[in-house]
Image (cartoon, one colour):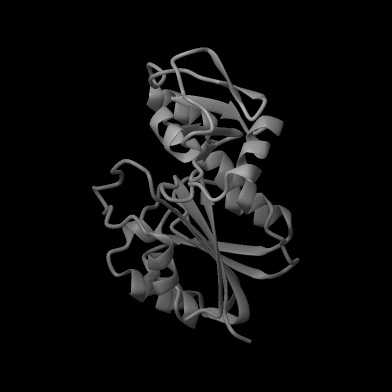
Length: 238
């Protein structure tokens, strides 16, 4: 494998050799020596040496992957929960807004963030373990008897077989101009099969299930073509 930091060397190579596929983990670019050789063609010869000259610059070369490629890659990408927590804590909280979280489980970061910001926070979850405001499913959202300013659906869409029913309930119980924030794993192991682990949504899949909403912004964690997770923001037309 060929490893080089996304530093002056990497940036200069990127500028001079566009277009090329980009695989980034953290600040590092990783590519096979076969790929590099093909893309550079006659510019250089890739050899099993520690350093070779590329356009007058030096690039670190290592033949073969690290002994623990999976562990190495995992260390280059931020932890999924940490990444998601950062997104959640960046959401602007409006004092006294009505906020619903669907399927929070025992993860308290969204609740703590919105309560600290002065929002009226409630939750619904089929399990009583995380002490939700209401024990129930998405079909019970209307029991709150209000329309919400913000609805949160973190790490939940993949566990609901009737995803379109869930998003329609969210739409019906959200005020015009209201916000939805959601997240789903993508590159992640099977989990929660006792209560259902049905889907791994792509960007297109997320846009499809959120098709009733006016604006959908999607952010990915890790490499674009095979991300660890997605974070989504959507709004309901005013």
